[in-house]
Length: 484
Image 1 (tube, rainbow, N blue to C red):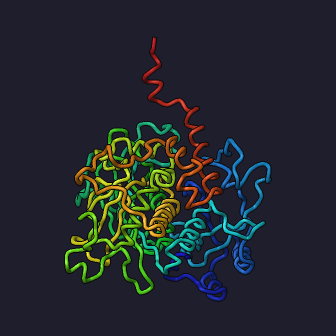
Image 2 (spheres, rainbow, N blue to C red):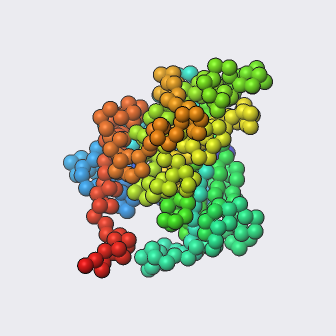
Image 3 (cartoon, rainbow, N blue to C red):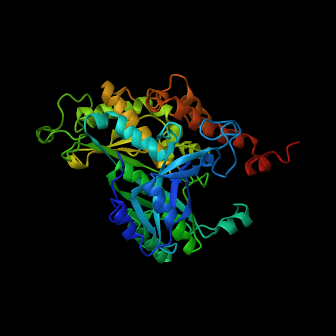
């Protein structure tokens, strides 16, 4: 299930040639396991020949090293010394056509990766994984379309890449001081930057639903408009590119790190999801008759009575498997610092749910407060550092599994009788614990995503843990330096 095309996307080679008639080069990019765009500039002739030939060779090293280009300590499945870091085959997705207006207006396209020996999608390629989940899952069998939205919170600093290096990431200057969530006044201090973030995102084919300050020094929140899930993953990944590119223009450095400050709330990456049938009807909503009569009569709990049975199964599948897919929501060491405060820091650390509850892991948005067409789940566990393709893949894979198995809700909603913090499933609150659950032989992750993906991606997280264990932090030096 490919993403919906951008407004000017070509549908054939002739249209592509017309779009590029005044260009001499094109930029292309794929996505690595950390959600980082990896790409290059190609001559127009090379690009067009690659489109004609259904792709081009791209070094597999992008799946053989970490976010700082350090090769993984142990040989993983995709790229390693034993296979010589051979090329993958990159296929150009014409539906993703955009222009980088901040970079000489160069044309830009996203790629997906294929294994040359099998001619099958590379399982760990984020774009390919999401497409596979959406095409092979229950949603495709039943003719459903997966829909999604994403919200990012992010701190910003009056810094550049060079000043960060010169300061060794210490004593960074926040864009603005103080806590000013939803401030009408505060954006005026940096109004050109604030408005450029919105306008350039929209010009880049990323519809923005909301854009405002959030609580914390120099924090913004941007909500991306609801669309099909594959397009949302592209939009979410590309919004980070827009934010960092616009920031460069103003010597501002945004960060999507989950927890930059120990004593302040972290940065979320909340995801909204629903399913539509072939006629555009929201599958998660109850019928009009049920809505008028006060909800579904066979609902076990009031919180879910305005959800369809299919939505309840989807929710139950998500709750059941959530502890086993945490590295796909929270991929870094720092991700789990955001969860440490739990509800007090607006970051749930249990597999919980509740009607319009921002304290729950899954916030139910349904009647009576929301119209049927807008019925959806907000998954509040992921941080802003998530890889959106992996997070969406996990959500829909678990939800489809719940629908297929007609999974029952394991317990009632948050704060209902008999439901306490001690009675619900707890989520791993460290990367080490998350990876252990993820890679367990009988994990739900292996069932819904396959051993190849779990072994490779899990191996990359084990590498992250190994690098962390060797690091000596400022906290350790300050605490133990004068130890007698």
